[in-house]
Length: 553
Image (cartoon, rainbow, N blue to C red; front, side, top):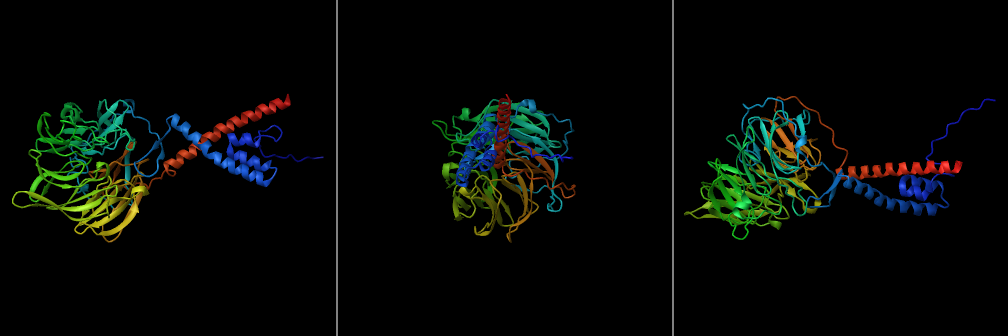
């Protein structure tokens, strides 16, 4: 008689020697729920048991998250608003990870994007046209490279890219080959700043300034360096907080040095005791103090060289004032009260006309248009309008054809919506998508937005309506850093990596890229659950085999 072989479904354990539903539930909750229903005495008991295991699953996954944190694979990131998030740890960059470039440096290329947010520090790019057909022809990725922590942006000059990073050995001023993103030189010094609340993360916040073959860089703890741009050689250095007796700000020094004529101008934190000089001008070649101004406590915006009411001056938003200072000695020309929670004036002011300045702040503050007038010598500063339609938290706005475009801080909504205002009246033209607390620049009549989630977006700058051209994946992880544009190439970075995209009109198109698999916190939770499941299943199989051997004996 022929007997057909039968194939039984594989089982983790037989009912006689396998683990109980309770033990399986502790080690592998999904399997425990399965056994609970297979071995149920009653449907009601199985339902209550399932509910208990689902509640236990939260603790089970939490243990997996704790293990990921303990091993340095994940960490908690709180951005100063909303709920804390789980993110992947990037580790601390070390000098051992430094890769030297073997590509020739294009030293004949220009020196256009040499300051924070561009030549005028207003987020405007006018060097060359850019391609704007991103939907049909996405920007082509030229290179991507790992980077240390911090919120510095990048400056580009004569084929070199300059930025600042947090490394294990300290703060690093770094120069990369703009052609391939690999290292040219680095200047390391012992410093590691992080705010008391851990909201910003460790690392420098300021962007280096390039001028006439030299790099001027200000660290988060007050270290000011003048370096040779070609090889990183130190020309002069000092700590401005120690030299002037001022104290650091809650979130560290963020302002980028400003070079005007033979002076490099920096803001030196807040007043402390006898330390009253908070705006300092050093000789750019020697580091000698040219003048020191006893201005109010400073904030986080970078000083700007502007012309208002017919007078060239220094425009600064301090902790509680918008002010114009003399470029020759730092003496005040005018000021206007402008206070915000925690003294967090961060966004750059925006010159709207020959005598008007737009100013904005987050934390529920809003925005205003300020008119500067000079009659019979004394300057006056008065608000033309003020509203809450656009609240720049740390993303500065841009101006195009009489309209202001910026990201509006939506407070506890964990969002920043793109807004268009009429510059003359402050009236909103439209309010659109949430791009997160990212940054934006203006180029070829379009907004280039570096989104908080690492995407890059292109939006037409028109008051008619919100017209999104494309939104594409660009970087991994939280991105707060300002992008940079030079020679038709877009440079993006965050605290993990930087990348260069070709957006010249005649450049070859790239691919649309692949988005990451969901939010980082969801990824961490899923991996934590998978980790616990693998460990639980391994232990469960071990117990099952032991029981089988015991039953045979």
